[in-house]
Image (tube, rainbow, N blue to C red):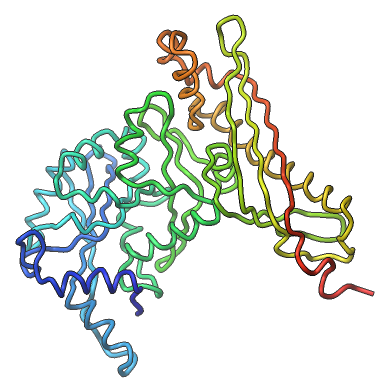
Length: 386
């Protein structure tokens, strides 16, 4: 079992200091993962992932030893039910030997059933709790329970929470999921002009999770999901794509295009004092990262055709995200309401409560202008069929 550098440094710092906020390590349970859900009867289920510092130290130091010897378990997971989140955590004292220390939490997993009833309760509790780690990453478990996510035993890290956090961060880089910190949720839940989204997480097997797609909310309640491609379309519109790779099919081949820069402009067009349509204008730049095919791509006309295909591919993902959120969820996750609030305040005062329904009925013009800045030093594939 391996331990990541981040987790090792994190725990090592605790061990070296020996105390945190005048609290001895021997007197606390170090929480690295927190899950909140509801059961079939509506009871709150709180799950904690607890790290045993000494066990992790033994695990890491014995890696060079004799392979399969038994070791002290470095992480354990436990759940408890209650009428409220606070009640469940306090009641958990009946099964834990030391006080739970939430300031070390790295990941917050919200359950699907809990989110459908609304996440206000969780945010209220975490905002009031002085130990809450505001920089913790937040994800919604889809098709499984937070407890099952936190119980995975990855080969790549001794601490599951650190593995989950790293997996999500890697997926963010590919623009397949949205990273959301707890402190961001505190701010977004108060914004009635833009509905919130949270990255989704699924369990693949007992050792692996997948973080792709987002959970869509309306008025603080989970209403649906976007898949990884719809999610990327949403991220393009909201200017959150820093780097991603898009593969497109061409005659007799395939090209992988690396997006290096993307800028989006949103607009709500008004007519006779009312919103008439939405407008999205995206400009992006990319490079040819890989080419599999038979033809030589060297002429300006070839590059122009690739740019058009890339523009169409991005437009398709944006359109899919829009159609899903408008027709199925009536949830303005793109922030068009913020534009109305800013530029048409008098209209917003009258329409704020109905905005999501208004948004769902507005037609949208989507324009994507893609440019290939570097086609690669090799203009033709390394090997062509005769």
